[in-house]
Amino acid sequence: MASSCTSSFLYCLLFICISLFVSFTFAEDPTVSYKFELTYITASPLGVPQQVIAINGKFPGPTINSTTNNNVVVNVRNKLDEDVLITWAGIQQKRSSWQDGVLGTNCPIPPKWNWTYNFQVKDQIGSYFYFPSLNFQRASGGFGGFIINPRSVIPTPFDDPAGDITVLIGDWYIRNHTNLRKTLDAGKTLGMPDGVLINGKGPYRYNDTLVPDGIDHETINVEPGKTYRIRVSNVGVSTSLNFRIQNHNLLLAETEGSYTVQQNYTSLDIHVGQSYSFLVTMDQNASSDYYIVASARFVNESTWQRVTGVGILHYSNSKGKASGPLPDPPQDQYDNTFSMNQARSIRWNVTASGARPNPQGSFRYGSINVTDVYLLRNTPPETINGKRRATLSGISFVNPTTPIRLADEYKVKGVYKLDFPNEPLTGPPKMETSVINGTYRGFMEVIFQNNETKMYSYHVDGYAFFVVGMGYGEWTNDSRGTYNKWDGIARTTTQVYPGAWTAVLISLDNVGVWNLRTENLDSWYLGQETYIRIINPEKNNKTELPIPDNALFCGALSRMQKPQDISPGTTIRFSGGGYGWLMMMMIFIGGFLI
Ligand SMILES: *[C@@H]1O[C@H](CO)[C@@H](O)[C@H](O)[C@H]1NC(C)=O
Ligand SMILES: *[C@@H]1O[C@H](CO)[C@@H](O)[C@H](O)[C@H]1NC(C)=O
Ligand SMILES: *[C@@H]1O[C@H](CO)[C@@H](O)[C@H](O)[C@H]1NC(C)=O
Ligand SMILES: *[C@@H]1O[C@H](CO)[C@@H](O)[C@H](O)[C@H]1NC(C)=O
Ligand SMILES: *[C@@H]1O[C@H](CO)[C@@H](O)[C@H](O)[C@H]1NC(C)=O
Ligand SMILES: *[C@@H]1O[C@H](CO)[C@@H](O)[C@H](O)[C@H]1NC(C)=O
Ligand SMILES: *[C@@H]1O[C@H](CO)[C@@H](O)[C@H](O)[C@H]1NC(C)=O
Ligand SMILES: *[C@@H]1O[C@H](CO)[C@@H](O)[C@H](O)[C@H]1NC(C)=O
Ligand SMILES: *[C@@H]1O[C@H](CO)[C@@H](O)[C@H](O)[C@H]1NC(C)=O
Ligand SMILES: *[C@@H]1O[C@H](CO)[C@@H](O)[C@H](O)[C@H]1NC(C)=O
Ligand SMILES: *[C@@H]1O[C@H](CO)[C@@H](O)[C@H](O)[C@H]1NC(C)=O
Ligand SMILES: *[C@@H]1O[C@H](CO)[C@@H](O)[C@H](O)[C@H]1NC(C)=O
Image (cartoon, rainbow, N blue to C red; front, side):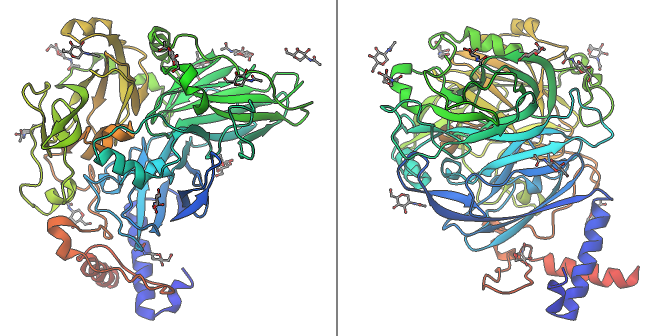
């Protein structure tokens, strides 16, 4: 701030006024600030040099560490050669889909520009991650963990751990995202990944034949006897992974913002886009190091051998290196029953406090009447207008050139249709910008029906939903009889087994336009997504924050966009709205009037 004020007196006054404005908007909650500089760096996670997306020179990026109700400010400087948006998966950004970082709500940040995200992590706790949402970039990195700690006055259902460790796991290709994109654009499939990374690193050399020499692996250093919180997210492209630590129990404690009933697992399936917290007690005798494994799930193990992620758990008193075979995965690659039962066993601890002091279970979702029902069905990719596309309910989503939320704000017509069907379309698939009409304060039931032979995960921005049921075959009205109406977990990403369905309930209390998508990056890229638009018919600034003054403009509104001064060394710049200047002047003048 001090250095900014050296530029000129006027700028300085403006700056102070803006600071006042910001502090008015977000009450007295503390702010955590980050600067993200996105660049390409060369890394060789699997022994082959390739371009990866780094944040501040690091791959993966830094973990955002926040506390409930904090304001989070992230200045993103795009030093890549293509547009960028960062999305905060699972962070609910109450009242502000303006900050969501997907094409339906935000214009992209052009190369060489920076843009500052500013949102509040309101009424949330838990483990999440962020990633670049455009152009298949997540396949090249740009991701990192995102933690929301509870406020100190709110009890957690476990003792403070000795350490808090973020572990990002994910399948990985040696080809970069531009290459993978070309493959998909050409109508081909990506094929088998080349490996699984743990925190951006390749496997420990557990087998000299399978793993080449010279690959850097992840090591987690621990003290004997202590208990650590290990937060694991699957940030990969599309592979479900089984996570396990040799000889150690994983006590499941939290998933995507909900405390779970605490149960031990020897291994847990973590699907693309999902996050879990485990409490792991270092109760072994440290006769050696221990393997940390993330292995591909539901695949032919003999051909997928090479795509196993292996890290090392190292006790400070360890007597030697880890050796011998990896701990076994569940022996059921051709039967999902074990996995689905495991998923059903993950339940909400209804008596634990979440972000607020009252018990999580005091929101009795099971006794709320459903107002809208959507059955969303995926089918294997199809050719539409000569292109290979993925669909949801027969519709392959086409991103609008003017973001939906922005089009609404400026009354641009014809950008999208509010006609997403309650039931899958019959008839030929089509490409549309078709959006779900959500009812403000409604209670929506969404059934995901997976008609493919591979695992899918689905995610909704802006909300946590209750996972109330999963089952094989086609969902019918009778399936409701199997719903868990009491302690189904509230989370932001659920898996849907092949040939099966998953039902979720969503309380539509967050005004905005929110992305509903598959987290399987290839199908998402090919159009398997839509948006839910939720409008409070009574216009006020309480249920939705006003458009931020730095909003970017594009598409039909691009003439409102001021160019950003991208010359190096300038200390003050206002990018953003064509109205930004006007607004700042008004605030400036307003400052004198107060
Ligand atoms: C991706 O890899 C190709 C070579 O396969 C290379 O030409 C291209 O520059 C790379 N793109 C990025 C963004 O690193
Ligand atoms: C861009 O970054 C510069 C330097 O970090 C900063 O002074 C400026 O405010 C940023 N601009 C925006 C629009 O965030
Ligand atoms: C649920 O949370 C309560 C309150 O923190 C705690 O006492 C209890 O042990 C938890 N139950 C389970 C099964 O994890
Ligand atoms: C997050 O920040 C708090 C202080 O605000 C610190 O106590 C805690 O250790 C940090 N957590 C991580 C994982 O860095
Ligand atoms: C290494 O992997 C190969 C191929 O799967 C296997 O044949 C061999 O037994 C393994 N070696 C060791 C030491 O486990
Ligand atoms: C989980 O396993 C640990 C040993 O690793 C044990 O001490 C603990 O009691 C178990 N907890 C539950 C809830 O089963
Ligand atoms: C440590 O545990 C391993 C596996 O349980 C056992 O084989 C070994 O004998 C133990 N070593 C010591 C020194 O107790
Ligand atoms: C798994 O792959 C191996 C090697 O390609 C093949 O021989 C085997 O038949 C496959 N197993 C099944 C059950 O498909
Ligand atoms: C739900 O609907 C039933 C029947 O229409 C009605 O009797 C009940 O009061 C409703 N419950 C709530 C919580 O609105
Ligand atoms: C969207 O839903 C609202 C009720 O929530 C309704 O009034 C409106 O007519 C619907 N719009 C369309 C285009 O169906
Ligand atoms: C896909 O849907 C068709 C038609 O309803 C059905 O016959 C087929 O079994 C389904 N496949 C899967 C994997 O669900
Ligand atoms: C909301 O806030 C904006 C900017 O702060 C203001 O222009 C607008 O009049 C407010 N709207 C209402 C309904 O209060």
